[in-house]
Length: 336
Image 1: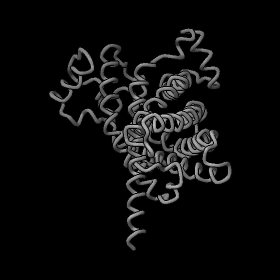
Image 2: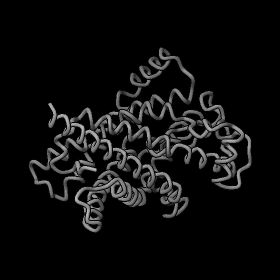
Image 3: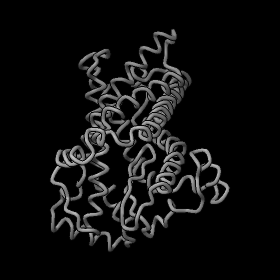
Image 4: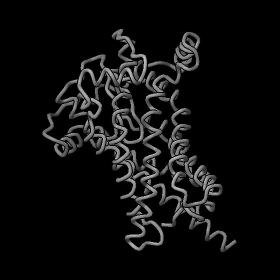
């Protein structure tokens, strides 16, 4: 695999980077979605979700709010079968419901995940190259700055789309009804209401991206040196992605817990009239008061099982895609 982080980067176009990130997003979704479907089914089996309540469903690329027994979900998380564990759940779901059930919720995920991933990865590479020309290619701050800014931009752009998608899942609406619903919400609460929950997402995703890219570049350089590789291989990119993703996931977990509370609270407040919390910090204080510091670390194991493979698959596929286009461009230049 050619190392895109150095001089080779300039030989891949932004369109080629976008295609590589799209391929990475699709492959990541195909691999990781079944893991989260099984996890959600096991959770629903041990602690059934009551009708009208919400839970967060995530497949490694996107988080989704699912309202229990809504029309679009059709109770996929309540299907028949008692599962003894993860492997048993995989076997029984395939046997009883068919293999397609393992990819429940994949289409709406890709509709939002693809533009998010394209913006995020393409911006990261473009910003990295711009900063390298000014600060030097070995500057340690480049991954932190580029990772933070690219994630901030992608979260801000896509946040209203996620709110709209969740609204459509919560209540089956035609596009005309959806437009009227959004228009009335904007008229009542202003345009900023379309970015509700944005602050919690930024507090989780921007630090995650800064740590992820910094550690990824460090691990990649270290492994290349230790293995005597002039260029990072698929294995190096995969391992570096998994390790850096795991570290970032653990450190940012408290903000992920807060984001989950705020997202589910948003929809429950509309149906059950629960007052919304004023801020991210207030939600954090409530969680600590109720469950102690341990409450901010809830779900650490499933988060690691989701994030580590998702990061590994995404970055290694993306790097491989860029490598493919780099060699393709090189051949084209040699044979005009």
